[in-house]
Length: 152
Length: 152
DNA sequence: TTTCAATTGCAAACCGTTTGCAATTGGGTG
DNA sequence: CACCCAATTGCAAACGGTTTGCAATTGAAA
Ligand SMILES: [Mn+2]
Ligand SMILES: [Mn+2]
Ligand SMILES: [Zn+2]
Ligand SMILES: [Zn+2]
Image (cartoon, rainbow over all chains, first blue to last red):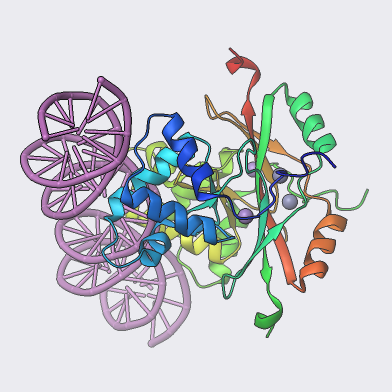
């Protein structure tokens, strides 16, 4: 029962751990960045930049600052980018030492999001990679359907 | 060995079959549409609108016309839209009576595309749907990696 | 406190896609 | 075949998400 930590566990991360990760890269802990991390920290599902912008406490920051912050956090591996196919990128905080790879089930009517633990079977993926001579193969996978409340 | 036809077989479709499908919906067979179908017909992989535009014979049509044509063809189920996560939609011709559902393996360096026959295991997908009370669940799935020619 | 690279706000630029509108045209009709 | 009109097109403007240049601001090291 050692470090039953990551795997893509969604337990809230300590703010100090997050700012620590930033500091290590000689990145400043600014007001906007702290506010953004705080919002991501308390949100269990992927958020669009606009949603983060809207959740910002009054006197938040510029939208462009959020775009720049998410680029930075993604580069540092602190957030994972997801694409639900609606044209807007979504971001989710990632635990330290976790690559954040996982999937979602999205309601096509109300946009409800469910975190999914399953992944594409690696045996099949390996076979696909080998069969085509590809290396470092990974996948992007999201599920779509009608949630209980949206079925007719 | 009856109709070993579709399934997502990539054998070129007859132009007459394509125009026929359009006519049935009281849609006009215009120059631009014929040209677009011709390009899709001879291309085995998903194409962006810009790529279609570039492949158009001289004196082609407006880009907006291609966007409108692809919307129409998608609505009629004649093409399937794919998303490789680079911000541009891609379209592939779909056989009659086929929903076009399938996946790709894309080289992240040179963008080479391989058509993939495998699909996400339906037993697992059904379990995911049931476990969350979702109905009509489907998925979007693409693979990414380094093709033989791009491995260092 | 001083100092300066990092960061931000703002506005403009970008890029894929959509749309309004007037001009054009495919394909039934007579 | 000439006519007619809804369907289609070209063009230019608008859109929504994202990026970027630049001058002003600021975190944190010294
Ligand atoms: Mn998630
Ligand atoms: Mn394909
Ligand atoms: Zn996976
Ligand atoms: Zn599939």
